[in-house]
Image (cartoon, rainbow, N blue to C red; front, side, top):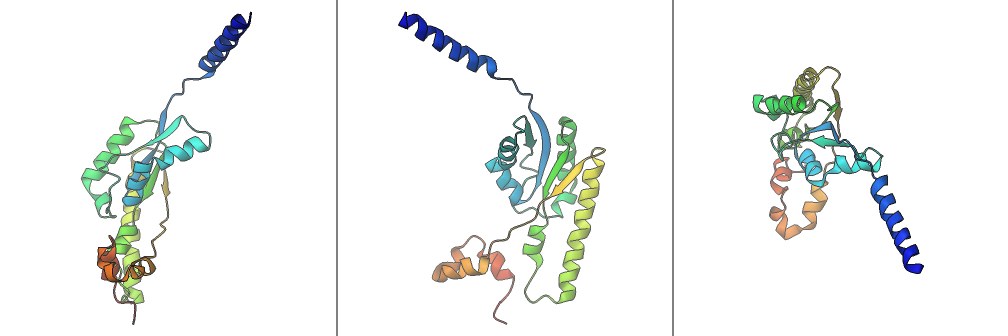
Length: 186
């Protein structure tokens, strides 16, 4: 009798587990594009984890290494190669509704200097904003109703981190970027 009861409980548990699982239809809802922040999110699957955490496990993002590239800046996304890749991914995934964008930071990191005047800083800001506007206009043209999410940046505190490793500062991977921004002692 115990064997029969154990088999029935085991069969019931297995059947309940197998039959209770629904097959989800995975939909690509987000296109991820941008610089290293996009590349890191792609490598870490950040967007998929967030969607799953908030109850949308049937939604996912898509990207490619062409459009989520370490070191990319706004100039890169005005290039026809990247725009063609973006359009092809949007066309191949009709369920995409949102483009998650992370670009602009490398433009500032690569071009700004502590010796900039207010006018030079304003000019850099206006130039980056102009290129971002062109990129956003292109993204909006890829499909009617396309929504764009442009995430912000959280810059590393290069100065404290690099100065903390005093004799080996030049070994830090971002030393040259930090150094190119100018002397902070003035």
